[in-house]
Image 1 (cartoon, helix red, strand yellow):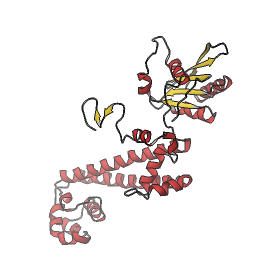
Image 2 (cartoon, rainbow, N blue to C red; image 1 turned 45 degrees about the vertical axis):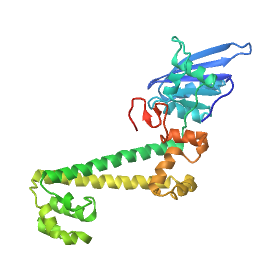
Image 3 (spheres, rainbow, N blue to C red; image 1 turned 135 degrees about the vertical axis):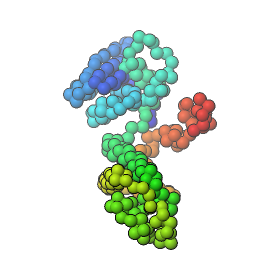
Length: 312
């Protein structure tokens, strides 16, 4: 994170919308006045290129935009490629700065704040890590879907009066899966009870009773769909994990270092690294990093309590 301690000579502010970029550039003149240039650009690739070329032609030293939504990401990438120093600032912080005139455009106000160093740029990881975030966060969505589908399978079993979950601690284990596959195939409970491994071998009678339910053809149909979907999701997660692990080669030293922490395995280290990067100097201090990682009270909290009175 950076803060300007002197006035920028040429500062730009961008008010970002999905298909509209409103850009204001403030240029300090030798006589002490400030010249304002303002243009609007569309949201297509050619428009963003034109915007960057215009900013470069004006000699812009700093570009400021808000981090609202996701629409800032594409313009930021173009500005980054052009080598323009760009700050993505917290919208909440922008609103807290006093002194804005009502007739001042959003883009001009951002340029003013950047010109006087009244805002701080948020941590934006490099392009490689930003792209990896797409993968890691998609993985998180798939993992959530997988957990939801497992819960749905348990409910279908309970709906059919099959209480396997009361006997088997892990319905996702090898033994339980084989039994569920057997139920789908229409095998008898007594035969399925013999599929138990380890300590489950001592519970064959209980397993036979637990597996003896009222499984209708429609129950079997839903179980079959769920089982197939679970296998599909698990395979996708395996492929995603392999992709993420391969992508860790440029950050191998940090990846290995994170794995020395108790409870942090290869995957957890990978996901952490993708979020914070391998250069913590961007955060400026340990306190700022802790605030960014939400492990200390933020602006809307005091001693762990939200201003609404709720405790996190």
